[in-house]
Image 1 (cartoon, rainbow, N blue to C red):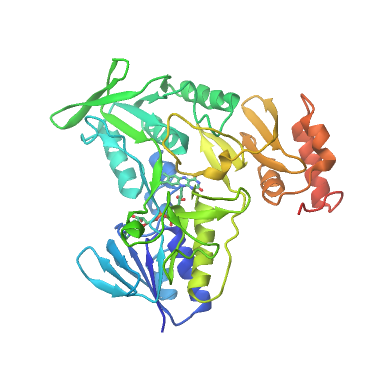
Image 2 (image 1 turned 90 degrees about the vertical axis):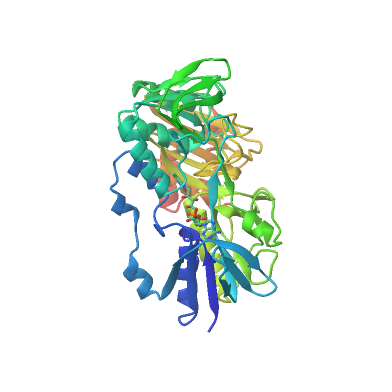
Length: 441
Ligand SMILES: Cc1cc2nc3c(=O)[nH]c(=O)nc-3n(C[C@H](O)[C@H](O)[C@H](O)COP(=O)(O)OP(=O)(O)OC[C@H]3O[C@@H](n4cnc5c(N)ncnc54)[C@H](O)[C@@H]3O)c2cc1C
């Protein structure tokens, strides 16, 4: 009987366990995670913070599901891997053997190193315990300062707003999420935040968190302003938890380096999810994603390989359907470029692929709060961003991710002021009817 050990209890480990069980009904599957809560929906934490989702809705599978699949679970922290001996060590010194090992330990929030950062009232949003802690802080807090960028910063802002906490949002630059959104999109988000009474501070950097008796009482900015507050929320990006693999002698870069079959540099050791740095054939580089669907798909491919069925993980064009200032937004493929001053590296719900923009022409259409932007390549769409009305979200997910040949509508799309919605809607209906368009190879 083969012994499979998963380190981490997130979506990548769950998907790997399910794949293994489909192939190997008898193998011993042990999932080791260091969180008391086990497996839950991490993206759901944003809705839990705003009060839209009760806590029990975060748990899609229960004890009976693990029993049914014969998956054993253990709460522990793995501190070392011994690839030569095929063993791992737990925090309490216990040594456990494996035949196949999965490292799926995810990513963790980057914390700023500033005076006062350890004070009670400084928060981050990585996991369920953090979300519970933020909710407790928001019950007694009156004013919050949020620092950072990307989706998590806004989720924190929205969480505080919905809990009636006066919120200041600090931006280092002159607009929100500047390496994914274009200027119009940033302004749409910022305007909606202001309508929700969020005070935006542009060109503002945190210098120090001020405390009294161990608790946050305010912040001081680099330009010398003092703002009283009870909560300081930091969302400046995440980093892959590569330390365990690195300390165990595995090859790492910004994450754990894996082959197309999710194999690490050590025999019988695989890695998947936010911690894995995966080769992207589209851009010819190994990249990090922090996205639910790629984590699940990598986990699935890793599980198949662990169970002996060679399965290549084909990185697909990443997309995310998210919410920015209460506006549903779909981001697909390559849509931005450069750096964002508000974050270090990657953020949650983000993909490095989104910023690998080759030659493309941007075409956009605006209508009230809705916005559509497509990046037009030689004969495919390289990326798309749909803000507000989501009618074209699914068609564009298909057209971009399947690299459909758009040469028949390319000229129309790149005309200034082109009616993009109509052109793309017509194209989609032709596609559905099987006319005029073939899959781009
Ligand atoms: C607030 C928030 C919002 C998000 N929003 C979106 C979104 O809109 N769209 C989207 O696609 N994605 C989103 N994501 C990202 C998505 O949740 C992740 O990509 C996905 O959960 C990654 O899964 P994983 O299995 O790789 O890692 P994780 O789910 O992070 O699981 C890793 C687990 O391993 C545990 N662990 C770490 N080290 C050890 C150790 N040494 N021993 C034992 N256990 C260990 C960790 O505590 C954790 O429980 C969001 C994430 C967060 C936190």
